[in-house]
Image 1 (cartoon, rainbow, N blue to C red):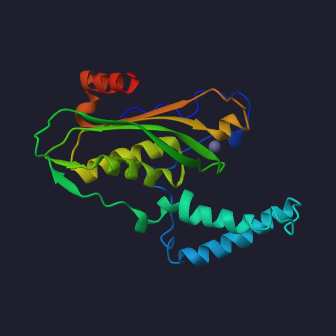
Image 2 (spheres, rainbow, N blue to C red):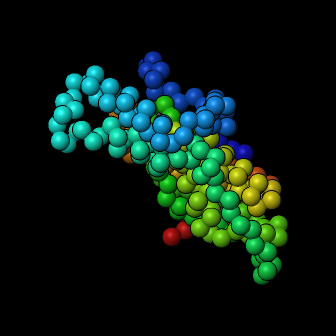
Image 3 (cartoon, protein in one colour):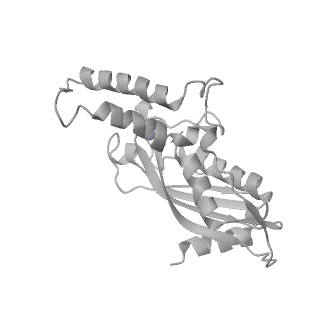
Length: 225
Ligand SMILES: [Zn+2]
């Protein structure tokens, strides 16, 4: 596995709020994370988000603003952070590899939208996923679903990359998986250092993908138009 640091930019000042440490490959969730059901979560987040807006001095009686706390709460629970909840875990069906296709399969340019767990602003980009079948295959759209599931969490790009790679290994029962992610981080672009052009690349290579020739074939394919 080779991972590049999430920030290509070097910070020589002491803006620690721009550091992006990753504590573990597993998303740090508490054991009681899903005792509360979605509807209760939405109600509670709505309350707290209304309070944040109040503190900021916004007039919540304004027509344009009064629905915002509920919209944000629903979006968090049902959409952008729905990948935290194991009940939304995709369960892809496996098929026999009837064609005995034994070459690399690549699905490239899977668009994803995630959120930086340090700033709660979007990370978005493209994921490229490849594997060698050991006798089973899954529908291509299922690879998209795996990417989306792990993207819909507060994330750091390195963890997202590894979580997708490990899930592909587990689901396809193959040790040969490659994942490359190119992403834009709004926390780098729209605030902080304000770099709108930098992109961050991360990669996960297991099994055959650690071989130079295989890695090269995968990367060439990603870079071809
Ligand atoms: Zn961030």
